[in-house]
Image (cartoon, rainbow, N blue to C red; front, side, top):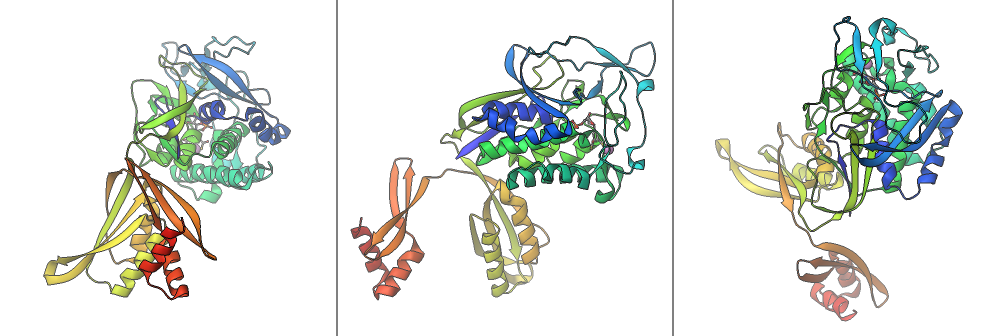
Length: 449
Ligand SMILES: O=C([S-])c1cc(C(=O)S)c[n+]([C@@H]2O[C@H](COP(=O)(O)O)[C@@H](O)[C@H]2O)c1
Ligand code: NI
């Protein structure tokens, strides 16, 4: 059971997530080759050694037409004009010839400010950024999907990347109160964001952790320039994408979590909580392009469960107006939707009604599906949920030959205990086919070991 833990104590941007996962990947060349389809579109992706507050990590530099996009925090408004903001995005990239310590001053007057929704959504609608501003492209979801689908990615990677973009499109649609099919991306529609989304999807596919856990997300504070103008941090799309996820503003003035980072977290992370008990085997640091007092990185840790409890959710509803048949059907649907266990308990309810509590246990990643199943297949108007610690034995299933037949035997071990038990369905088939009792069938399986 492998756990990928993402420390988002300095937020998350697409390139930071990609850098952190890249450090964990075995086949780094294969990964970069997997992104080569993007070079046709003028995108170059380099993994550069980068250092923040003395920590060595990787900065994934995505160049589109030779330029790297940066988010423009409005960290300081100077006396010499309301429109001047101090851009503190600079890099400390060892393999780079440029002067990384320059501080650019962005003047709102040099920006091409406009309503991106007035454009027709053609993916090649670029604005010349000039010397003082940033490039952005206006792309529709179908245009972005076409680019992603044309990259020759494994099906699962392509589907993940498309799902991340769907989330971004829904966030844009919500923020601008437009239908999803009328959304035109601005910054996140540029090729560098596509590279981030595809890169992270590819690396997740390569690492294939059983569980992805992330810390509460530090979003930063203040304001940031985007295609709409100066917006509050977290940017509106980021705030929407992170709803329901634990976040905090903290002391740092600047945008720490971008819409792309937020969409990637929403899609890939199973649960948000402090680092679980795990035996960490590999650690990766993905560096951002900006510098703050704290190391601007996402830290990724890969490891296994280390004897600590897992978390399961118990969902429960009280039912006083359903038939036994209908409740039985709901039980089957809950199992089909991924419940670990489902049970009913008799209760007495108001107005002297005999009733039942229908309960089920599930992993957090299945919780929302099971809530939807409860609402769909029962008459309840509310679902209760309680998280529980759960300690488990390691389980394995082995096949055992009993004469001409194969019977599955479940082995469980840990906590000083080892035991084995034949799978009931196989045992019942054996008993019926051989015309013996269940006990006799069990003895035959035990005798065959
Ligand atoms: O492109 C989109 S959807 C976008 C939306 C918003 C809104 O809040 S609406 C803000 N921004 C800003 O663009 C840059 C780049 O974001 P990436 O996700 O492409 O890294 C960033 O400063 C966002 O706040 C983009
Ligand atoms: Ni927007």
